Structure formats: C-alpha cells, structure tokens
Image (cartoon, rainbow, N blue to C red):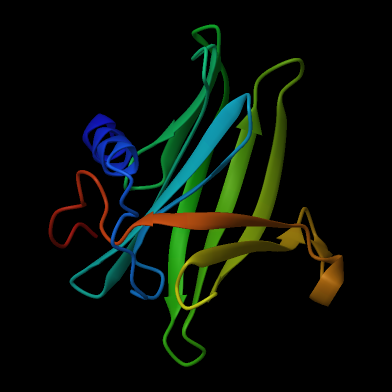
Length: 166
C-alpha cells in the first residue's frame, strides 16, 4: 500500500497526471477529506474478483484494514472495535460487481450489521460509485440508495492477490 501511495505522490509532485484509463472495475480508487482517506482496490485473478478496502485517519488513530479475502479489522487507538467479512461477487450477465458484508461491532455493544453494496463505473472509467442496495433487511432503490464515489488513482493495485484461492 505504501508503494502505491508513494508512486501516486511522486506522479502528483511531477505535475503530470497519473495515466488512468478505463479498465472497468479493476484498479485503485480513493476518496477522502481533510481528516481521512478511504482506498478501494479491485482485482480479478483467474476469473475471481477481489475487493480490498483501507480507511485511515491522517493521524492513524483510526484504521480499517482489509485483506484480499475480505477479512477486515477496524481499530481506534490500536483497540479492535469491529470486524468485517466481505464477499465479492461478479454477475457476468449484468456485468455488476457487488460486495456482501457482515459487520461485527464490538463497542459500545456487540451488534451485527449486514449489507450489500453494488459498484458502478462512470466518467469513462474515472469514477467508481458504490451504492448500498440492502442493509439489515431493508432494500433501497434508485436515488434512495446510500452512495459514495471514489476517484480512480491507478489502473493497477498494490500487492495484487495471487492465483486461485477458493
């Protein structure tokens, strides 16, 4: 991850925009503000799709770190406060990528949340929209779906998943 961020920073400092093209879902996507950054990496290996999410505050007190198998840990000041189990699915008939997530919150009370997010690539491959279609039994349609957008920062991913791991 550090290599990717360093590469993006170096390209930015040269005054040249990174070479971004429409690779569909594949690549690295980012969104953030003055407090934190959220990075999504999406890869396909041997017909299987992988989704890895990283979120952290700039002071690194808050982090969500995921591996390519969809296992994530959320920490605040080093203390584990939630885990996530994400399953990535690709529907070839509709060419739709989605994630199904089970979130286990540990503080302040133990709670379990389930949700499905559906991805959509727009703007000639430069923007990834992530729409929540289902959350804890409630279904969302159209403009009622919670959504967030990510800007593409690289056509590739750092530390890509290796081979078939089913």
